[in-house]
Amino acid sequence: MSTLKFDPARCVRSVTTFSTCDACVTICPVETMKIADNGLPAFTPSACVDCGGCLGVCPSEALTLENFDATAFFFDFAEGEERLVSCRKNVPCIMALSVEHLLSMAFVKEEPVVLDVGHCRDCPWNEPLYTAILKHVVEANYILDACESGKEIQIRDIAYEEEGREEETEDRRAFLERLSLKGALQTKRSFDEALEAVSDEVREHTVDLAAVAKIRQKEIPDKRKIFFTALKRLPKPAAYHTIAEEDISFVSQKYIDMGSCTACQMCYRICPTGALSSDSRNSKILFDTMLCIKCRACHDTCEPDAIRLQPVFELKEFFEPTQRLLAQFKVLKCSECGVSFSSVRGEKVCPRCAVEEAEALELWGLEEKDDGVVVFREQERVNGEQDIVNGEQGTVNGEGKKEK
Image (tube, rainbow, N blue to C red):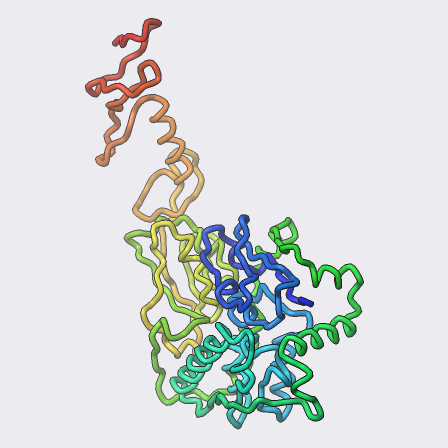
């Protein structure tokens, strides 16, 4: 019985139709997660096994499980003496925890955090979950080492079992079903909701007006807030190191190629967290590294490919976060409509008027050359077909013949 929920307002595919994010699809061990025709994730509840792998890879926390709250789990883990994380003890699967969660857990513990992978070998959904777990741990430990934290996340083959529980009477699926049933009783879900949770119909999602309003709020995921809080426990390293961009999956640093940027404003308008922003005059593009979730929405949307990932990530941002100026533009008044606009190369006409002018020239049979000179088009329509007119403008009489 699936308790997986999807919030369209949080999905990066909702902020831009150009998004190529498919992390939830790639990690799904039963391949029920798909990208629907409308561009949003969809899944069949009866096929979902509530492993939570999609939770651990979603950059914006658009997916949740009713019976497992990663934020609540972190605070319980941080406040208690427990260091063991196991799919038979306190999580549906270790992959339900993101790299940020693992780092935050390590920051707040004096002793190493221990991940129990003892049941992974016999798990029917071993792949791609197990490989992803190992990858997360390698990344987290690499960052812990680069931060000179002295912390560590350990992987052990413990195969934890609840005391008094007979292993042969309960496999992994039965455990998940028991967990789901317990959650259903605790939360007193309605009968209709229970039926929906076992439905064989594909559950698709749409973006309504309420979701649009929520998208505009530009929320920061809880796991990033947790990361901010836990990071305060870590002393500053003796030296600030850098790591390769590809070695860190959840945050990035960027720069803008001003030779390509058109000041279209799309990158900071669609950024789901507000990591990219501008001032009241739209004269700048500003970037807060620690608000970036590396969802790549801005990269997927930027038509001229002007926004780029910095090849290395500076860990100094973890301890001394700054707001960087990526681009600055002149703000001019359009010579046509008088509206202020961001000018990249000293244009005198705003983009809207430039489009209207181009459309008008096309209607008049004119075109503007690269040097700014307006001339007659070399092609004109005669009897519905394109005809070369030696660069001269002509008209068509009632017999389909050209007149000057």
